[in-house]
Length: 209
Image 1 (spheres, helix red, strand yellow):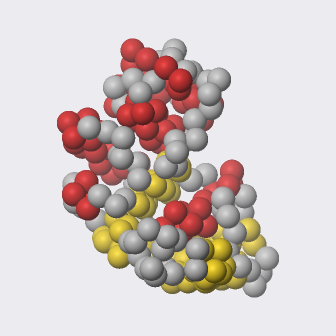
Image 2: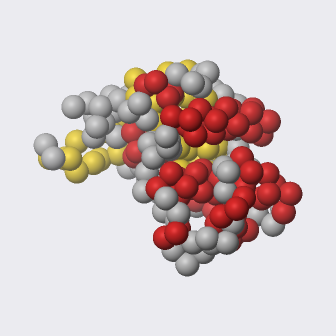
């Protein structure tokens, strides 16, 4: 379970605005997050992962404080051990597909399973520059899964995939998330692809239009 009650000042095109989030996300489930552009959906994920810090409040995950401004607690990203799929993939240009996964885990059996899941088996020695946008996006998803996270944060994770690949990958992904007992937050502007997942829906309007 993720309990988040925080405030964060953001510089928006209308000037400084305050993102306010007070929400509980069910443990071991999927929350599908919609919302207008600029409402702070990506910032929400970054706050949970400690890629940006709230100005005040608390984030409690599975009963443990990850952030608490009153007690000056702020766990590092490494200690939070969250899987994060970035909109821009954030891949390492000098690492091959398999090296991305080996950087996250030494479990060869798990790596091979992920490569098969993402249909990147035959591209294991390729670097990102030699992958299509869809292949890069699949690698970003696999890398996030490689650490077997308890919390998975996905920001527009299927935008570069064609319909057939998207359906197949989401089908496999649902099985893996259930197996690992992952608490997943998925941000997308595509309501149809999110409907492929079962879970709670969050209509996010952190700072509104």
